[in-house]
Every structure is written in structure tokens, then in C-alpha cells.
Length: 228
Image (cartoon, rainbow, N blue to C red; front, top):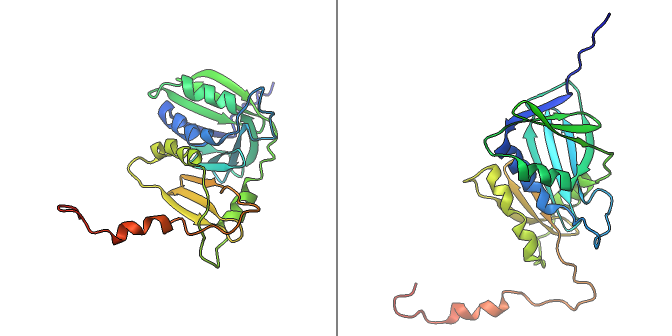
């Protein structure tokens, strides 16, 4: 009799806190999933990718997008895959994990297994992902030949960046406008985290004045006593 021993193609073994931080950095960028919000392909799901011994997690709702990268604990040589899992199940995992728990994520091409303290905790089935996240990056990260002009941004989208700071506390996030034809806000935290925030389109509007014009009068004021 021949016994075949199988093992996961890729493993990430870390703490509950780290798993919550990884997922928490991208989940704010998911589309809303509910009866009043019809599901669009992959926009309510977490895109998962394994490549070159690295885990990538990506979420987008078209208006913003976030990418997290993290080294795997182990992976079968040359193993790579991509799939998506339901965003709600990913949220459920982050809400229930204790920071001090020992957590192992086991990745296969068709499922993600979550083990807590060496006990199976959740098996999340996957499906094929069609999220074209690399195309979105390519459109924005193409080197710009001309300076960026002012853009309109929804402040609520900027708030989605806050949870990512826990990936590397104490390190400032770098924010810049980028893109040759369609400018966007690009936020990075080293090589751990990248987010795109798409601008509000001003279609059919007349050219807008410089948004700083209404502030220059402050420069002409005489400082009050004791003021800088």
C-alpha cells in the first residue's frame, strides 16, 4: 500500500494581530455588499495572489484600490495562483481573531484554510478572480511627462488609508499624484502597502480657478502681536 502525504502549497504562519492588520489594510476598499448594492464581479471579494513566495491581497471598488504584500512562511517551489474569496468571510475572520492567537493560513488553488492555535478554524472556498488590478496600476504609475494639475478627491476615500498604518507603525505614508492621462492619488507604505484613490471627474464643467486663490489674502495680512 502506498501512502501519499499532501501538504499545502503555501503557508503563512503569524499572529492574529498581523493577519488582522493585513486584511484590515485592504478591506476598507471593498465595494458594499448588500441588497441595495448589486454585486459586481470581484468588487465585493478579496483578490488573493501567490507569486515568488509572496502573498498579495488586493481590494477595489473602482474608486479606490489597495494592495498588500507579505512574505510567506513557506511555499512549494514555483507555486503560483490567484483567486478571490468573499469579502464578508474575510471580515468575519478579522473580527473574531485574537491578537495573541497563533494563526496559519494555508493556500491552495481552490481554497484558503485558516487554523488558529493548531486547530482548523475556517475553510474559505475560492473562485476565479478577474480583477484587473495590474492594469489599474499601469495606468496610474506610468511616469508623467507633465506636472500634475489639481484634482478633486472625496475625503471619505482618504480615510480608508488609516488602517494600513498598523502594517508599519511609526513609518510615514508617502502620498503623491501620479498618472499620465488620468491623475490619481497614490499612497505607499514602503513595499508593504499601495493604494490608489481615483479623482472625481469634472465632466462638462468650465475650467476651474486655482483652488489656492482664495487663500493668498492671508499672506498679505500683517501678523498680530505674538504671532509668527
